[in-house]
Length: 95
Image (cartoon, rainbow, N blue to C red; front, top):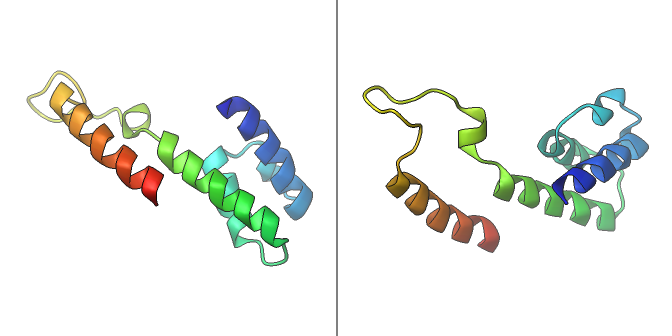
């Protein structure tokens, strides 16, 4: 589903900004770009806010940060993941 939303978002951003970068930018960057547009209808603004929340919810530091802390074999411990997901999921969904 994320890939489909990403594709639709790229075209939506391009429609409102006519910026070629929209077709190669990430979902998060495009949602941010759409939120920064001044002359968009309120319903599109609402879609942009949803897309930003969706991207924030799905963004996972482990997918983008490949540095392993000194003295550890893995980026996260099981306890880190459990704490991070339970706290962040609640915070992100309720925001």
